[in-house]
Image 1 (cartoon, rainbow, N blue to C red):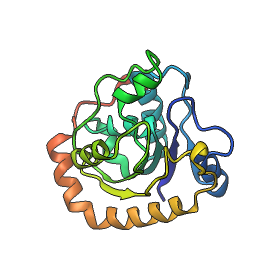
Image 2 (cartoon, rainbow, N blue to C red; image 1 turned 30 degrees about the horizontal axis):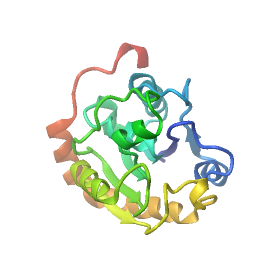
Image 3 (cartoon, rainbow, N blue to C red; image 1 turned 45 degrees about the vertical axis):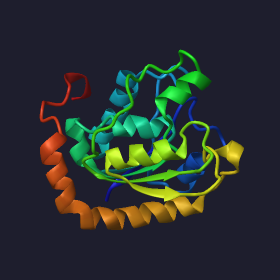
Length: 203
């Protein structure tokens, strides 16, 4: 059975955030911990995520904000083949995010390769971290289906998202899509996944 990895964004997910409720409501869910939630570096965050993927085998990913961008950076990584699906909630655009939090994030350019696993992007019309037209473009580049929640802000505590049971339904739907998408996903993987060995630090 696939493990569900919960992947917060910048500053982590505070108590009361829907990701914290997810961890309590689903005992099989695992939080991907980061050494430094306040000054994210892509290499450090990605190493932490890949260690959890390596530990658990087949996984579903549930990410928020910068966590969604982290997941998108798996596109060419060998361990991406162990990801069954990714629910990417309120991905942030790195440009606007840097304007809101200057000099805090070291993540390089915005990832834009197709993801070699089934993915669902959940966004809103008034997210300060990602204009909706940009979200639509990014979702297309990632090969993700897009769900529009309307005027839902950044889909976090500040915009009224505590326990978010609809997210559980979306992951179930996504897993059904993943089963149907398997041949397409395998074709994408053959084109874009880097077949180099897993870094020794993760072995």
